[in-house]
Amino acid sequence: MPEAKDARTAKPAARVIKKYPNRRLYDTGTSTYITLDEVRQLVMAHEDFVVRDAKTGEDLTRSILLQIILEEEAGGAPILTEAVLANIIRFYGHAMQGFMGAYLEKNIQAFTELQAKLTEQAKNLTPEMWTQFMSLQSPMLTGMMGNYVEQSQKALAQMQKQTEQMLGAFGLKR
Image (tube, rainbow, N blue to C red; front, side, top):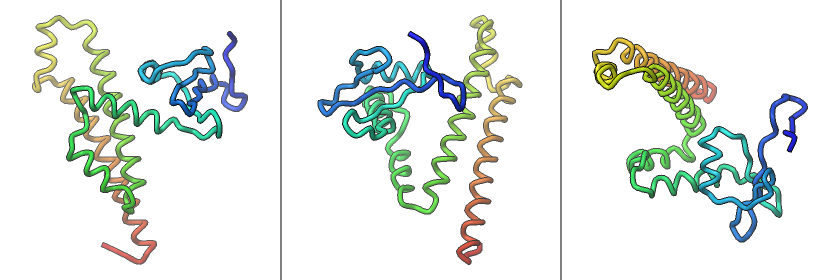
């Protein structure tokens, strides 16, 4: 089956999954019904996809991703504590809501890059070397974590600057 291309960007078009009223998901790329776990596998494989309501064409991708997160969180080893979830809820409707999303996105991206570097570095390590590598004395680990912390601080500083500009526009200064 030939791969569809987006003429403007020359990259493969996103796979379309249709969601029917009976809650079934239909993968138009494979012409089969798929499960939520199979959608999770697409995410894990970094495949581009969009979930659309079969009747209206409305984009339901976010709600499906949130449903996957909900299932993962209920599965035993949650990432998001009650305190984190409560704080995220508190940002909805708050002036800082848009900044919070960008901040979380930048931090998760930086953490993902850190994880990729650690994985690459760890490929050829013996168990003994791995123990030494993971000790906080490891300059490489300290350097990588330093880069992550630095990126996080830059994102926070940028958020603070944007907030001050926004407040300044409303005549409110610190």
